[in-house]
Amino acid sequence: MLGLYESGYTHLTSGNIAMLLIGAGLIYLGIARKMEPLLLVPIGFGIFMVNLPIAGIMVYTPEGLPALGGLKEIAEGKIGILNLLYYYGLNTELIPLLIFLGVGTLMDFRPTIARPISLIFGATAQLGVFVVFLIAYLSGVFTIKEAACIGIIGGSDGPPTVYLTVVLAPVLLGPITMVAYSYMALVPILQPPVIRLLTTKKERRIMMKPQIRKVSQLELILFPIVVFIVATILVPKCAPLVGMLMFGNLLRVSGVTDRLANAGSILNDILILLLGICVGGLMPAQVFFNPRTLVIIGLAVLAFIFSTAGGLLTAKLINLFLKEKINPIIGAAGVSAIPMAARVAQAEGQKANKKNYLLMHALGPNMAGAIGTALVAGIFMGMLQ
Amino acid sequence: MIDWNLAFLIAGAGYGITISVLLIISVIIWIITLVTKKEKIPK
Image 1 (cartoon, rainbow over the protein chains, first blue to last red):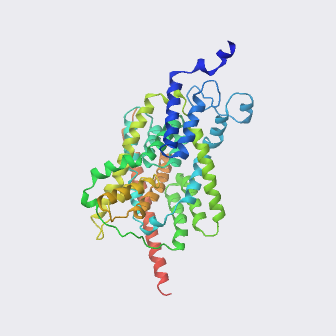
Image 2 (image 1 turned 90 degrees about the vertical axis):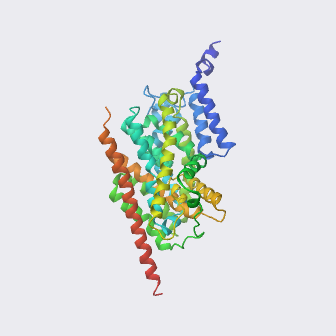
């Protein structure tokens, strides 16, 4: 009988059961639907880990934040193993930064360099970040720091979102990260209606030459160096994020550091695993079932819509001054979500004109979006930290 | 208390800075492209 009272069964709340269902849903989406499986499966299992009562895998403060501590606190039973991962990985900002390094080793900036105007789409597609920041803050539901972290979901880039939220609003890290990564997987559903609403069929039919120009090795090497130096001089707080991204990319393109670039991409997989399980661990029922979480879910949709519109409308505006028109759909790929947003542009372009191959053109704004979101994170940190 | 001025200042300046920085970078990249192309011509 005593054993039954010590079991988790008697402590299981309806909130825990609902969270277990959400965790199962994420694992299902990851495995069966192949939606961001590398993240949704660990997040889903992390949710299981912290919603089975008395297991003590993650211990929280009364404010809903993970209790901090190291090996000594683990030995004393004051914290769980996930607290340790959170403390060393997220609280120190190490995991999102190193993931960005790994992302840099995987990114091919040739389409961006071949058409530098792509960088403008990567910037204007941050519109949703700032619109939703305003809505979230002016609604009175969130503080100004929390509003910034909710807004940056619209940048559709995981590491800057995690990095900014750890710094400005760690209590929202669980819901924000889960919403950000889930919605990134939903880009093929969220973007097409906005694209069709804001463009005419004639605009979507605009043909672009299938090939982009050849980019030299010198240009490839100079790109990460120029981006890092200029961005850091103008927005110093973006240095950790942009620096890691560009360092990773330099390793890739230098032609002499292939082994380091490979190590970066392997490191990326390990860190994504740790990030996923940590983020899942930040979603106990008492934190997740909060009206504010539902508001974040709604605001994130708005952020994606406005960001898509920002890139798209800029492409239409620029077309007014260009002799050889660009297909405005590629502007929508300025929301990062690499490479999903570029694939959406390709699919929508082909629906309007079967001869259209927009993928390479859309990858330019797509890559630029990653730089744009890292910049925005630095701007918010400079203004609000 | 909600500070409307601060919110609009951060949003406006933030968006403006983002566009300006990437615009500057795109111009530099475009110049580098022109310079490296010109260097290839004498060869």
